[in-house]
Image (cartoon, rainbow, N blue to C red; front, side, top):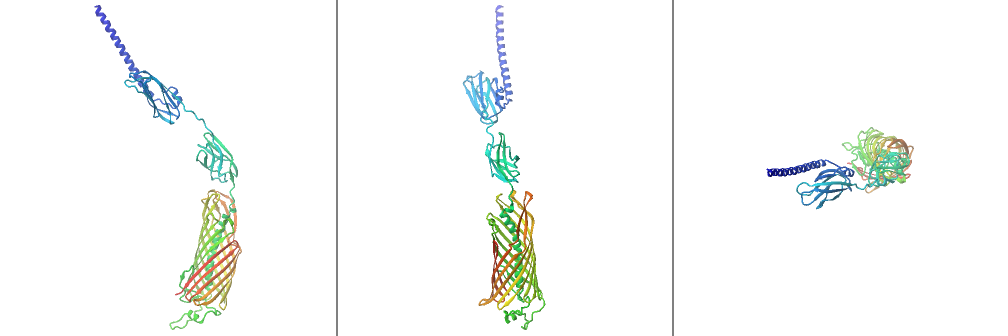
Length: 612
């Protein structure tokens, strides 16, 4: 019985020990489970600064790993992991630390420290784990963080100069502000006024568009996150220059008026040449005086009766000029009108140079063409109509400024014989044109351009007397030319704040001309050679204009420019030759030299006349 009791107590003791071991195993399993759950909770932790880490966010006891956790760190932060293995079922120790993809390993050490230096600023991952094999290890872990050194605010901005250092009071000029530590600028002010716009080019330069401001020197202030800096009186606002003092502006306006006057005058001259031709009784059916073109002459006679006193016409010529009947008998020319139409063309090419403005001399090339039709209305009256076209180009100075012009015109004309050898000739016309203007502005370093409409109402009245002495003909004349010129207003584009606005302007040009034409006919083996010489003086009696100019951004400030449509006094020297091969063919050339103060021009004309 005692043996039985003793055996029973032994079995109870062993059962108690087994129960105690099982309880300890269960307890350990429960602890490990709790740690695993705690570890899972730790995965949700996130540190944003070194201070958060140092506050114990990642400190754990008895865990064996820390899952990837998102953190926000700064480059240069130093992460340290201090560890101690508490329980390990393997034969060696091992642990790994990872921060932002960078790892540190520790092996064969029951405790120690791992360290990683953060290389990138921003969001990244943090984790560590045991390298032991078998069952999870129990490790006590403490994580610390040493923050990257704070460089501090650093040096503030410095403003030293501007380039260019001056500009117009209207602003809108691109200028470079120069200094130090200008990166991150948040504002730039000129004279306390915010600029119209700016771009940080580098730590030493900012490109700005200046605001409007009163004239004078102003401070320039730049503000950055590290502070503000001011450059004292480093930029000067200057009043806008007076455009009427610019020789290029004066030359441009002068030529705009002058070119319309010249192109109208070319049409007057072309028609006047035709009127002189109409003084003769033998007028071609088709006549051409433009650049060596060739056109047929009359199949029958037109014009006024031949002068009785013209002894240079032979009897045979008179017989040839008179119409004949079928029986070859001469038929008298009727004293009444001859309504047959006569067609003609004329033209001239002119080159000139004006040195009135020494800094803006201009060279001019001009072409005027005219075509007309006329008829004899009565014994002493001939009349017709014509259309004309002219082109003109002028280069002004040496900076590329220039003007291109074109003009269309229509005109009516008449020649009336008031007495033997006396003629009155009249022309009345109207022209419209367009001028393309391109002005280089040295302040803007750009072209201001625009187009300007033009109108010209013109007329001419002349009286001439033709005297014939042998083979000489002397024809003094007096002429009065009148032109009413109007130029439309226009506004330039392309020159920024230096664009100019030109108001409408007009000029009434009245000029008187006194001159004499001399001609002589010489017989040669090739035919009759007619030589001519012309001498004339032209006096402008009016023609002044006033041009109002303003900057386009400030139309209230008006500048006035005064000038004239043409030179006050001009002289004409002309020399011509015409070879009359026979009654059907003639060749001719005319050269003119026009001379005025500070200006002169050359004009060349040629014609070929062929009859069949």
